[in-house]
Image (cartoon, rainbow, N blue to C red; front, top):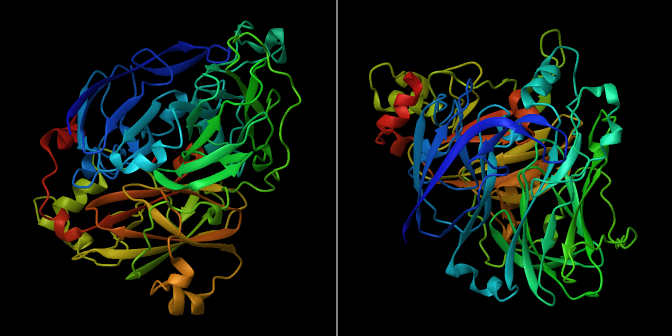
Length: 538
Ligand code: C2O
């Protein structure tokens, strides 16, 4: 293992990823941000410099466990205060896992404006999978808005906009896409360069490529496909799975898949790589939306040939609601069955309807908003250790919701030992919600709609009967379908405060976030580094 140093400089400016000029954010002057690549066991030392004029920032390493370094998880108001404009902050952690991840700002809706990049970790544990492909290729897929996220957020959070999320204006693949400027009239006030082109993946013929798909968007699920080729899925969110062949791969916000593409069709033409936005999950429609974002796959030796239009393999059924690729098809290559659960939390979420709550999300009745000038982590550590200003009684509870602040739904899951936690995540909402749990991979034990079968839960699932839960898929982001539920399990062995939230940026800012506090007994003895505390007083 080695230590790898990276510098990320966050700045603002104008950009035109699809030809439409807008204010946006950059990392090291680029969009998207640079690839961060390491081997398992390496230490990453990342110096983040905030060159924004007004706003703070913070970088989250999506899917990375941060065991022992919760304060570098990057979640503003939870594990750190924002890095103020003009200041730098160093993240310093080891990576004890492998696979496809990404990093992104976790300050309000900031990543929607450009603050993200891919994060890939290699390990000898991937040796078998490594035999299934020759080359690696990152494919970032995302929705894109032509206005700055705070403009959209203000509109969304204004009263009477219940359920009308901002509708994307376009999609991007690896930070680029075509946009038909004539869709904006001369009086639109937009500057649009019509010479923008597709992103081109120039590949070698007769090779196998591990496409590392990452949905870095804010709202839209995509169905991903490559004309005239099938895809063999081998990884979901850092978990290797037995190869599964698909033609169309649904990927929701913040999820990752590796899918092997073999470049063995006719070499005399090029092919469309398509990312189709699943638009029926939207309530509103954008006047300019083209739901299919395309890039060119070229192994013909001539990247300028435009692919023909009509060669999609439609034999896979289209989605009929926003949902994940069926988990039962994704069988982890390394069997790891969940231990019996020691505790269960039911979390109901919905969007509040009422005089002052339009468009605010409720998690068991709580509307999250980020703490300012402190974090739940600092409050917990100080409270548990009885330090000055710490409120020990607010944190003295085990298996209880902490009462220290009305807008922070914090579940204390393991005051004195490692607990195995089941969460029944129940949606009382008509939308689809890609939920992410920080710091862990969870098993997906059951999904359904309608009433939950408690009898079956207590007799079979909680005690981990192998017939019901053996080798269930593990991942870190799953989609909860409309008015449906999922039962997930994780081992709470990671001391800290961990967010569980809908990754749709608009929904998180509307309050759709809960926190789990793990290993209070260890947290009590941990020292939050001085520079992390200092962020809260600058
Ligand atoms: Cu990818 Cu809480 O985030």
